[in-house]
Image 1 (tube, helix red, strand yellow):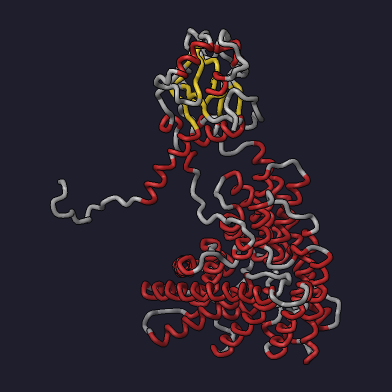
Image 2 (image 1 turned 120 degrees about the vertical axis):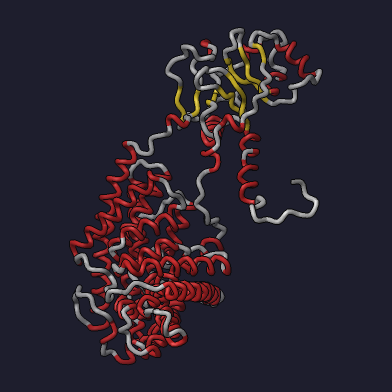
Length: 628
C-alpha cells in the first residue's frame, strides 16, 4: 500500500472541500481531499435508491409472469406425459393409467434434463438457491443470461415428468437470474446487482406462494447477507408487486388453506417447541443424507449427464407403488396440515417414500426445488409427533394440525437456517395467526438444534465444499460505530514546511523521539497542513539536502475529520492507497491527531473483548480473600 506521497488513486466516495477559507490547508496545495463523514451519511435513501426500487417493481412483474408461465409449463408437460393431451390445466400425475409404463416417464424427462445440462449449462443442475448464493458471494451477482430460460424449462420438464420437486426453487432461481441480467444490462454497482438478484428471487417466491413478507426475510437470510434499507425497501416493493400480480391470476386465498386453529395453551406451546427441536434434528439427518447420496453419485464410473436417469428410475419405481410421491405435491401439504391425508400409517409411508424419491433424484443432479418436498416431509413428521403427544399427554391441549404446521416450518428452518422466513412463511400460506407463537418457538428450536449439530446447511454445504465462505452472522459493521477521535493518536510529530531536508535527515539519524514514525504531517508557519511525508520520502537520495520539506509534497493532503467513523477512514485509505490520515477537528479545522492502519486494527480489541470476556455478575460469588 502506498502512502500519501505516492500518486492519488480513484477518488470514488470522497469529496473535495469547496473552499479553503479558514481551513488549515496550505493554499498552494489546493483543497484537501476529505473523507465522507457522518454528517454526509445521514441520508439513508437517495434518487439512485428510488430508481433501483422502480426497476425492482418492473422486475417483480416480469418474475411473477415467469412464475405463472412456469406453473402452466409444468401443467402442460404433466398433461402431455401422463395423460397424452395438450392442456395447461393444472393436474396431478396421481390418476394416470399408464401402469408399469409410468416408470419410463421420469426417465425420459431426466434424459432431456441431462442433455440440457451437458450441452446447455451445467448450472441448471440442483435446486437453484445455492447456485444463486454462490454467484452473490463469488461472482458479483452475475448469473449467465441463458439461465433465465434454461432453468425454468429444465425444471418444468423434470417436475412435469413426475419429479418430486416444488416449482418454487426454479422460480426463485429464475427470478434471481432475471434480476442479475437486468443488473448486467444497465450500469449498476455490484451491490445494486445483488439487490436486483435478491429482489427477483424474492419476487419469484412471493408470486408462487403469495408470501411477500417471508420472501423478504428469505432474501435477507439466504441471499443478501445484510440488513440495509437501500436493499430492503426495493426488495419489499418487489415482493408486494409480485404478490399483487399473483392475486390477479389466482385470487387472494391462502396457498395451503386449513381450518381455523384454537389458541394454544402454555403446555401445548412447550410441546410444539419440543416437536420443532425433534424436526430440526431430523433436518440434520436429511441434509447429511442428501450430500452422502451426492457423494455416491460422484463415484459412479459414468458421465454426470446420465446420473439423473438413475435417479429418475428410483422416482418411477416408487411412483408406481406410491403415485402421490410424483410431482409437486402441494395437495399433500394441504391435507397433512389439515389432518385430512388419511391414516397415520399412510402419512408415514408417504413421507418416507417422498423423501427417498426426492433425495435420490435431487442428488443425481437434476433440476428441481427443495421447499415443497421438505414441507411435505416436515408436515408429516409434525403430524405424527403431535399424534404421539396426544396419546402420551392427553391433557396437554396439543392440536395435531398445529404440530403438522410447526413441523412443516421447522424442517426448513433447520435445513436452511432461515428461521424467520420459515415461521412467517407458514403463517402467510395458511393465514392462521394463532399458529404464529408455536411456529416461532418450533422454528427457533429447530434452528438451535441444527446449528448445534451441523456446521453447514442444505443450502450452503455444496458451495462450502467448493471453497466458498458463507457469512453466518449479519452483525453491523463495527468500524462504522467507532468515531475516529476514539482511535486516533493524539501525539503528533510534525515537520516544518520550510525546514531543509538535511536538518530533518540529521534528526532522523540521531534517533530522537518520534523518528520511528512512518509518516509525518507537514505544517507551514501558520499551522496549516501542507501534506504528509513518509520516512522514505524524506530519505530519498534523489532530493538534495538543501531542498525544503514543502517542495517534495506533491499532492493535497488526504484528511479525515475527528467525528467521522473508522469505516470512513478505512474506505478513504483504500480509495487513495494510503496508510495514514491526518485528523482535523470539524469546528476549528485544526489538526488534532493522526489515524493509521494499525489504529484500525487495534480498535477491534474492544469488539473481541466484548464478545470473549464475561464480566462478573451481581450474583457471582466472591473468592475468599478477594478485594472488596
